[in-house]
Image 1 (cartoon, rainbow, N blue to C red):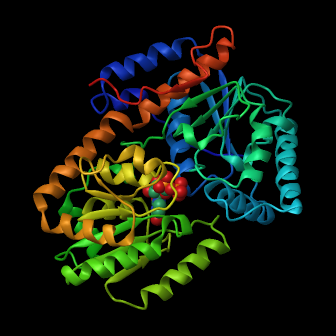
Image 2: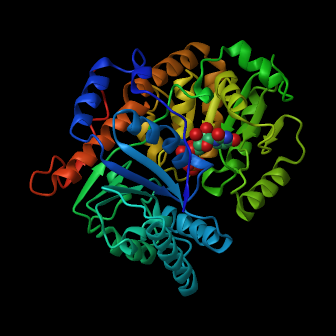
Length: 431
Ligand code: UDP
């Protein structure tokens, strides 16, 4: 197990960004949790949405008096491969884990639990993120734990879900962005529904004007004078980069000056699969000079992601499965109109035609691109509504409030629980 360092953040910094009532509610909820020791565990310290969330959530918990720490399990190639298969099994039913894979999965969790014991790692509450580390609590001899499911498990492989379900019973509470991600008979005492959130204060979300953003993009080979559609995502099959290219090609027939960017910086933890997807996407793009693919982390950092999200005419997130899709909230926060695949957590964020557009296929994605480019007033109103909906529901203090709620519930035990069998976070904040 590796301890992941995080920056210091203070709750007071969010004053003026989120409602004061939310900040005061958090402060009073935290009073009963002073000194509580909370350990988050996930599979990777960098890359993807979970690491992104923990980078802010962990220091925010600390800022309100909770002794929060974040550990990631030691990387190992065989475990990484099995974790990938597990992820695919949960998001779709086409694949399964073989006997040896299950063995690797369980042995690694046992090894991580042994390491935690040797390190003397203890917690009043373990917050275990995603399926890769779900069995960990079992090997830690079941201290109080909450499991958080971040993936879109609406149509999982049934036998793999059966295996996971048996480990869910070790947990006091299981959390997910949407109730349908968890099996009805999930065996946990209680289920809490709370979608993730983005941190408006990190450099990636620092306000950047359209012109400033375009200047950065010009340095990356994008023509600042022409329309641009972008998808910011890992090169992953569930993000459907081929579908984005196809939709772009259809849209370009009506808007010949259109450019496309696919932005997915590879992290050190990325695997053979991300490379395979990238190679396939490169072939599919056929050296088209108007299709810009970015995967080099030296070229794409926070500033560049911000510039693409702030300086594109449209952000597309054409996923087929999506646990939540932080990239959707990130672009909406920047006031840019978002077209999202009609699936999982994207449906939670986009109300079609109001604060974004939902699409079911390539043709409707192309149509939506053209409509937004041709109707600037529509693009502007959708962008503004998107930003407001993120402000109300998907900023980090709201997520902190939900975790405090869950921690209080566990601390109180079943007798005086504040969390019913199924409870959804009141994700909309009153003003
Ligand atoms: N991201 C990034 N650089 C990239 C591509 C993605 O920093 O080149 C970030 C993105 O801004 C977001 C996260 O990675 O914060 C992806 O989270 P999301 O929930 O959208 O998808 P996941 O990767 O977890 O499936």
